[in-house]
Length: 256
Ligand code: PGA
Image (cartoon, rainbow, N blue to C red; front, side, top):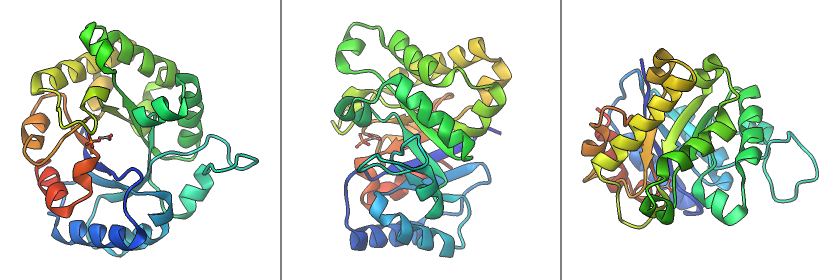
């Protein structure tokens, strides 16, 4: 059965003390999750160790720890980077790859992301692979071609089995990230259906039907239910609204 996921992307926010409070508060109040549902906390690197202890101590199932980035090499002279073995050591289950902020501010190309994808698969991680177009592309109505190229160049070398086992796609239109402007349910559903159609064409309809496609971009407690009710929207990747328990909990509840 297709997985449904709510993942919180904390970005470069919160101290260890704040993060601990936030995690404790969300985990203690969240409902028990259905067997095909997951909640993932993608916290800053400095908090992974503590967050791993909190997640492990919880009796709640299907809660996982995520990182926001990684390097493709296991070790070496890469000042300021973090390796997958380092993330494994602190209990990381999922890693966000290709977030638009990494692409935009740190120049991460589709080819560079492909190398990270391969390294994460070799380490048996779940990958939250982000794609999405900037405003000018949406205005030119070429968003489908843009997103197709992102997926094709970083993911379509994978076998269908590997893809199904490791890849979660997060569609995040850049014009909706942190702006308070959410894609309409029609815009989200249209792009998600187009991604699923592309997967069906490239692989098979059965495979496409198994892939989780999340929406991200100003998703909040008021719009999550409607967005998640779209046939091809399987949950969300949440930024700003993941930073407060009272904002994040209704989004988790919208999964049910
Ligand atoms: P936002 O961020 O929810 O604050 O728009 C989403 C993201 O960047 O993952």
